[in-house]
Length: 215
Image 1 (cartoon, helix red, strand yellow):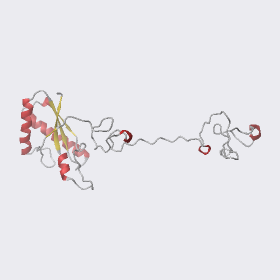
Image 2: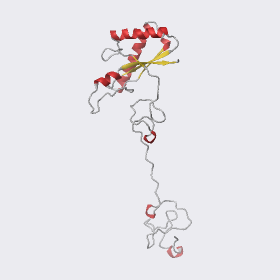
Image 3: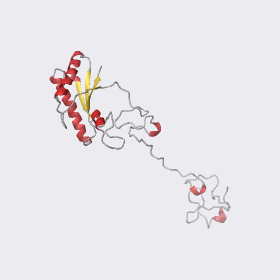
Image 4: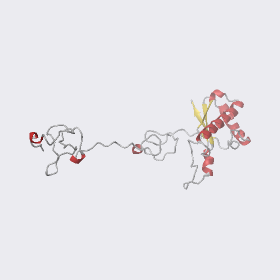
């Protein structure tokens, strides 16, 4: 489609908006069939939606609904719990199962080991003494009651308490490292589907784990 002789239109048209011919108000002139007038073979510098040109739209930000660092389009394991280490497909990284110290409890709202916990740790002392060729990372975890910052500090203190007991009973401190994760790595729901408290789940999350390192 070409433009009628430009000399006849010079007083009525302006060649604004790239190759399109517009009136002083910026409206593109059209013929009787509603087709836009433009200069043939000239690049259209600015797309015009009313002329059928596609107007560039900003691409929407890709979603990562579970916050694991893998966008939903590539996530093969949606709904991963917060804090879970995942691979490139968004699925939890398979690791050697940690040793969960069942029965290792603490005084309420503190890092003080109960008498029952100390007897359980005696078994760990014996195991570490009989096998000297590996080190251990002691991890502390809490449920979701309390602030994130408080739970992080409490979990670290509890991991440190376990280390102190082991060291006091003959295990080299250099074999032991500690880390607290607070409430960030739950192994069970802290609440039920209806949002109410889940005491059983929270009890599972209040734990100390041993991970073998430097085998």
